[in-house]
Amino acid sequence: MLIDGVKNLTQIGSQRYHDLLQDLPICIILVDLGVIPAVILEANRMTELVYGYSAAELAGRPAAHLVAEESRECAYQILQRVRQGETVTDEITSRHRDGTTFPVRVIATLDGDNNSQAIFAAVDITYERQRRNESEAINRERLRIAHEIHDGIAQDLAGLRLKSALWQQFADTDPLRMHAALHELQHRLNIVINDLRRAIFALRPVDLEELGFFPALDQLVHGFDQDNRLATHLEITGARENLPAAFELPLFRIIQEGLNNVNQHACASSAFVQLTINTKGGAIVSVRDNGRGIHPDRVGRATRSGRFGLHQMRERIQDLGGTLDICSALGQGTELVITLPSVNKEVGHAID
Image (cartoon, rainbow, N blue to C red; front, side, top):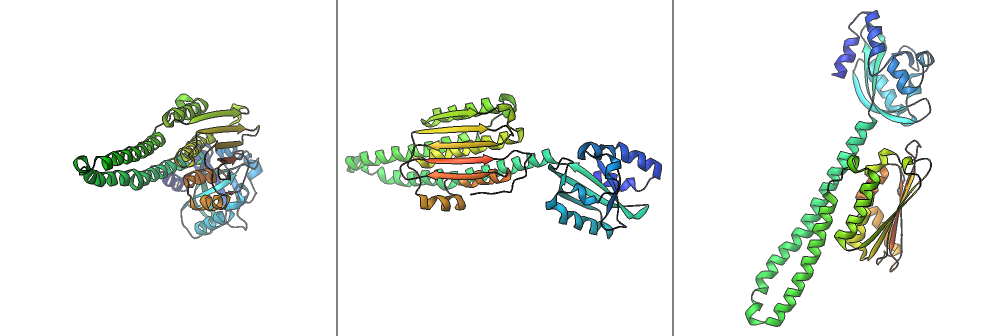
């Protein structure tokens, strides 16, 4: 629909075209392709509101002025394709007047009345991309849990079914072996029940909008304590209002995965979650346990290979431009430290 609308702008009279260009609720930019580099000829009111420049300030500037450095090559390719008569739709990173960046969907086509000019329509897709990332994260989480259930719980239950047929023979012929078999059955069932509880806990829906992030996080930690018989504590420092809304769901899932990791691998009796919020909106999360720890030689390999439940967590942290550090020693527990930068600060994706 938007592509058709942009094309239709080139089919109408110049004054009406100009009026529609000004009043459209999307960014419309008219670019001169006859010069190198291509320059902005005109921009509508929505462009002024979104980018922070007046139309007079934009006139005569290179079109690349509104494009973030990492998308300059992509923007150049779009211009080349438009010059060849294509109508191009793509996603690039754009730049506000204050230097902050944001994702946009760009639709570009030649001006029907003047082939030396192009019309660019740009739509801010920040929230769309957040929803897309959240949806992809949910799908990855479901796939991971499905694999865990198939490879762990389902295999354990299948093994118990086979063994139960053998154990049935001991009831009359060897009571002592029957007692040992029942003891093994109880042990394996406890493991399966704990795995199921963990899977159910990970799938449990959380309504952050209804509860709010901090009450939901408190519920998560105390619910984990009760469900897994593991003493879990939560400490939050810093001004809560400084935490960006964009961090709430990813942080919730990161802490959830960290606690699941403790329950599954650490053999711990207690865990401690600390969230520190700085004045610029950045956050540091620590998930610490008193369990058996990881040998220092295995820490790096575990992080890179995605073992110990770190794969999904690492992807979420990377999406936010943050870092993950693991501090551990045998017999001294493990601490995961996740550092997330301010949402307005450009930080390269770095995973340690």
